[in-house]
Image (tube, rainbow, N blue to C red; front, side, top):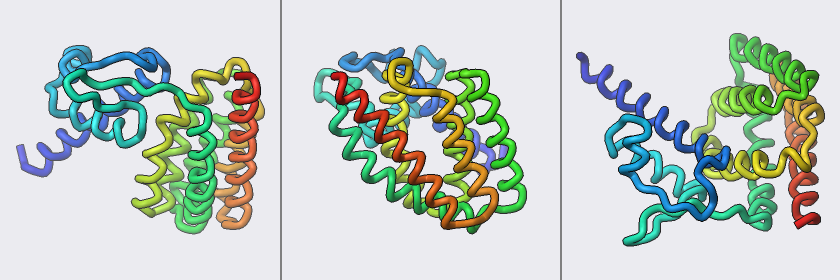
Length: 221
């Protein structure tokens, strides 16, 4: 097997392992306060410790895991005040990415954004939280690719896991799938349309909603 194929296979395994562990954390299958180990996760997913270790290092940088010397790896608690501080960063970086994506997306990417917008609308009509979450993940990845800025993408990766976990934890009480889907749909449409200003405004409107959701959780805590 060529070296390039071996490296690509390794990268795919590392990325898949990262996504699998992140999903356990985001969906609270690994609860805040739990201690996890590389060995247990490697056995769970049928992989060696190397991709698990790489995944946990990324998750630690993103704040979902904390390394506890001689104890293992601690799943971090959900911190509402931290969420509010994080939204300040998200607002600026997501607006930048949305504007760049509107300017730089290829014709094929714009077509995919339109398909995502339709899928978002369908999730909203069905009030389907699982469908919304799946389409939201597709949208996030595509917009990041369209933005063509690896530094902005890395900054977003640092906060998206915590943001998704917070949403998953509180969405049943405080979120409205139809409204959230509509705002994400509008973002996809504006980026696909290529208007930087409109894309930036759509991003800000979405973050306004996310902030109001977060403050609603804070008020009831």
